[in-house]
Structure formats: structure tokens, C-alpha cells
Length: 606
Image 1 (tube, rainbow, N blue to C red):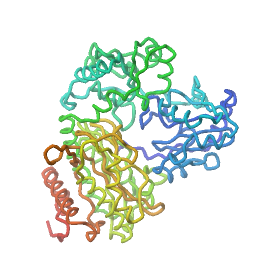
Image 2 (spheres, one colour; image 1 turned 90 degrees about the vertical axis):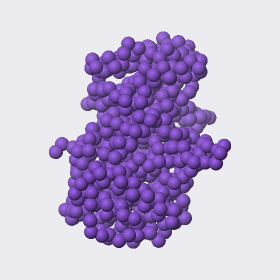
Image 3 (cartoon, helix red, strand yellow; image 1 turned 30 degrees about the vertical axis):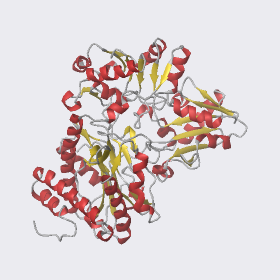
Image 4 (cartoon, rainbow, N blue to C red; image 1 turned 135 degrees about the vertical axis):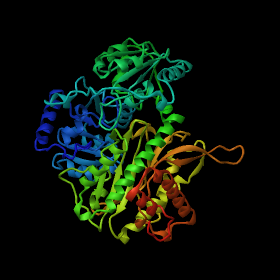
């Protein structure tokens, strides 16, 4: 079977030293003492096309966040807590030094590395205004200058750089969106008019795909059309994308108020654009700000006008997400039924991934929503581990498996993590597993007033680990799109997120714990913000759970669960059983009934 997921290892890095040397030659030719290589593309999406994978091509690091700064005598790869194990396995440590970020700010690193000042180049299409502004502020008084280059220095040394993607666009059914594209354009145009703005530049592919009710195939796992768009205050849109992406039906769907222009026409269009023009400093490239400023156009800094409306899901989008999660739950239950019936010693991580892909196909998925993370034993401690033929590990009864996966369905996007025991649960794992589970339950049961942000919620998930002296180095939750990107901004459950939660927002709920070299634990459900019961005069919110799949009862230390936690877990398992059992038969249905019996109840024959 041809699977969605490739298990090839990242390209061999025997020539990466030569690539680094070639980049330094280009830097010298340009009169630069350094050059910044971000993970991002010009659209600032988390996932990039092969043509934009400059950081991976140069350094070997394949994580979804980070950047490198190359100087004449040293080079650093900046990574957050998710990638501190992975980066050491992927980059040549003789060439690159991993730098813990954001603990170490790039401006501080540059100050220490270039104490006598210097010229550091960057590609203004690959950095946001907010990012460059923060770096300039940090370098103020250092004598170090940031120099915007006209041509990317990495592209200049990349002889076989892939062509930009030209994936086919498709229509996203209005019945699934809950709103026509014309209505969405009109609604956002009214926002511009009320703010006194003539136009807005949209740079995020998921914002554009949401606005126009289209989906695409430019980026693996993310059904978006890579494009830029200018939304005018009359509701018309200039879409800057390769015309080959759109067939006659998609063009008819877009209608007369959406014009398709070549991507390289964006600069000229911005120069001719009457202001004020809304630009989001958090997502729009620095280059766009510079073009408009040079043209004398007034810039109105403000949030991408689609980003919050997109996060507040419509009733139709919520219904589609619920339906997709029922089908996805069937797929995962069938996988777990099969897994429990196997001799673990006969299986590898890739076997599990392939089987899960097969079950999702049968359930109606059109793609996976990200490369499946299936980490056995110590591989589970690599937070964003991706199995390859080189790293593929056999399963054993004495180790746990972290399985983080998701599917893209026509009506919804899923993301679920379960940590599984394949034999007798090791005692050393039961305590942290249960602490992680209790954190997930705490968020699931949370009630909070309007105005509360993800930063306020985050500690609920960590409290049981903290009392044990433990923690994890990633956020507790990310936003999720409806038949869109599995990671969707701007909403998060994170210590650094001050955006208030609102009804209709969908987030992940995924605390974890990782012991390097031994094991990883993560549990994840998707949740939607909903109104909650409250006393008169007070508006309260809470969460409803979308994901439908049992937790591994073999790993739960029942002695540490409170009565309220046990009640929640039993009620959740009862709901999983009630919603999924009519969709299952045979061994899978029997397995589900057995695994969702009330906690504390002995197993019986079914």
C-alpha cells in the first residue's frame, strides 16, 4: 500500500559543511558578518513547501519551529523545548551549536557573538514586522546593523531548489462552512470600512482559504492554497497565486469579485494600493511594510481580519468537526483493537503508523493532518518525533508507546494522542501518566469567566506534575482549524497567550511528560469553548470534548484520582461507548465495550 506518510530519513548531510562554507562566501561577497535563516516562508505558515525548506536544507534540522544564525566563525540553531533532543540528532554539532530559545534571545546571542558590531543580513519576505522590530530593539546601541537583502543568500547556493508548489485548489462546500464566501468577504469588508481602512493584505494561506471557501494541496497535511490576497473595503479580492491551481469550477466559485493575479505582481499592486492598508505585524512579512512605506501609503497595523472570525467556528463547522471525530474515533478504536491482539515483538513503529493510516482511509479521511508520531520507549521522549526507516523501533511489552496522530476529513480535522501500554504497566510510568491524565481532566472540567485567556488555563494541566517536581516544555493546547490546518492561530492554551477564549474556538488539550532516553507520555483531546451555567448576571465558559477514544486504563493509578475525576472519566468513556459502538461491530465493538466499562469494575466476557 502506498501510504500518506514517508518514512525516509532526512537527506544525508555529508555536503552540509560545504553548504555552510558556500553561504559564508556569499555573506563575505555581500559585506555581511551574519545571515539569519528562519523556518518560515513568506506566508509565515508553520509547515513549508520543499522549495521553502531552507533551514532543513542548510542545517539538517527538520523541526517545525526554529531558526539559524550563521556568522563568519560560528553558527547557532535556535530551538525551543520541543526539539532539544531532536536537534542534536539532526545537525552536525561541529558546525552548529544548539541554542535554547526563547530563553536565549537572538539579540543577546548576537551581542555576545559580535561584540564589536557587524552587519547581519535577513530576507525581509521571511520575517514579520514584529520579529524584526523585536530584534532591532534588542540590538539597539550594540553597533550591530540588520540589513535587508534583495535576494536570499541560501537560494543563491541551492542549485536544485524545488519549484514552488502548484497544487490544485478545490471548492469547500458552503454547507460545511456555514457561510458563503461572498458573505465572508462582505463581513470582513464591513470591518475594514468601520475602521476607516481601504484594504487589508492577507498573507496566511489558511485565512485566505477560509475567506474564499476553498481548499488546496500546496502543503502536505494542510489543505490550503498558498497565496497572498488583498481584500478591499468593497468586498473584492485580488488573489496572488499561480493561475494553474484553479480549474473552471473553482474560478466560477470564486466569482467576478475575485481576480487571480501572478504572485510576482504583488509588489507592484502594493505600491499602487490606496491606504490606509491594514497589515498584521505578527503575520505579514517585513517586505510588505517596506514596499508600502516607500510608496507613501498609510499603514494601519492591526490583526489579520480573518484570523479571529476563522477561530470562532460556525454551527456548521462545529457539526462537521463532531462528525469527523466520530469517524476518526472508529478508526483509532479499530487500530487499538488490532494492536491489543498482536504480539508486540512482531511489530515496529512503522507497522502501527501504516495500520492507522489504513483505518483512517477506511473511515473517509482524505489525508493525515500531520505526520504521525509513534514513539516506542525512548523515541516517545522526542516530542515531535517522526519515525523513519533509520529510527524505526520494535515494540516490546515492557515499554509504552506514544501515539499522536490526526486525519483530514472533508468536514473536519482531528488530532488525538494516546499513550499505550503493551503489557504490564511499569510502576515508574503509572504515577506521571496519571498526573498527566488528571491535568487533561482538570482542563476538561474547567469553568471560567469571559475574558480568561489560555495563559490562565495552562496551569490547570500542570498542577499535578508540578507537585511531583515535573513539567513539560511545550504549550498545553493549540488552536485547530475546521477542515483546515491542525495548528491554527491565534488561540492557544499556553503561558504566553493573553488572547481571551471565546465560544466556538477549538483547541487541543494535551499535557505530557518526557524522560529523555526512557519514555514519553502525552494525552490529547480536542475541545471546543462553549457557554457554561452560571449565576445570574455572570457569563461563564467551559469546554466540550470532541475526541472520542478511551484512555488506557492499564496505566491509571486509581488511588490518586478524586471522585470527581473518576466520575468525569467514567462519563466520558460512557459517551465514547454510546457514540461509537453503533458504528462498530465484531472484535472492535467488543474491545470498546470492555475498555469503557466503569473504572474499578472487573472485566467480564462480552
